[in-house]
Image 1: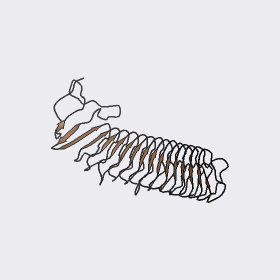
Image 2: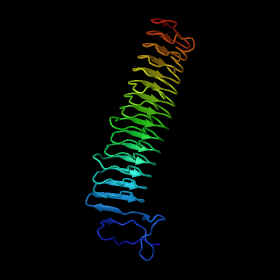
Image 3: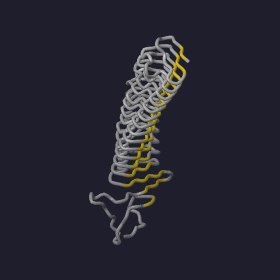
Length: 287
């Protein structure tokens, strides 16, 4: 097998296709060229490899590797697509997108500044921008106004659509929230089953704020405020802190198990500080 250095008519730049000793370009079982050209026109650099990759070659600095990677791109620049059907229908306006995996950013038409790595990551994103996702099905449904989100871990923020400025790190973190905004969920299953439109919550730890539907809550520690539903303005620091609170709001729990066990689930504006400290009514302080 030898590489032929001459270029086909009309092609400028480097010919990276493989040829046999007779000068015939080699093809795969499906008739596709085994290695597509690297093309260069002035300051323009285009690299494509695989059947359908960069199927419509325009201008700009782009890379497409894999079946139908960046297949429709014409004039947009700064895009990198590596994998099966990555950025398959992207035409712009928009640029500076990076996708690696299978079906990653597959539906994107005009978004800008997205980075997606992992199977189906941001697959249904059509026009949202500035999202970053790493992991299987991360930010799978994000689109439209769903901008500025970061998701890392298996199915993190999988159901998020038009929610914006969320951070989800950990397997299942913020998984079911649909239009949630400005939430931070760090830890396995942190805020996993949070309500569709929750906002401004912070959860750090396994299953922290697991099913929250309220706003402006802070939970730090494994299973902190795990049982909370529609309450607002609670703060819990410590393993299982505030675990038993469901609808009570405006509470503060500090210490391992503070607000757990026999804690009044509906207590409001109460304070419990210390290991296993609890309040039995609203407006109560236990230290």
